[in-house]
Image 1 (cartoon, rainbow, N blue to C red):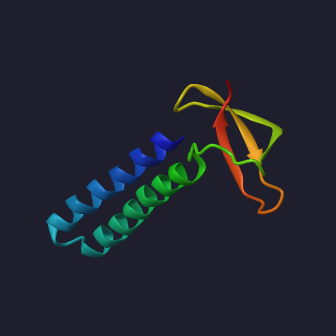
Image 2 (image 1 turned 90 degrees about the horizontal axis):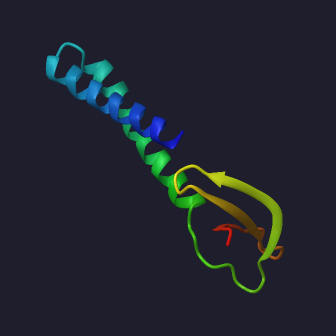
Length: 93
């Protein structure tokens, strides 16, 4: 899904550049560039936020929640810190 979002975002950016070069379609170019850049940035932020593989501290407890990360090909375990509510995603051993 992440690759799809990046592809659509970059396609919007490229379309915006092409529209800007025609000079006639400047409003369309602005729209495409704004949404393309926004989609690429939001996808990158999502990737950074949910794939920080920091070691959980002593206050983190493993949950029963697992999922398969298609990007890395690994099964991930969710760790939860009851005091802060923070969640950390780590590869299963």
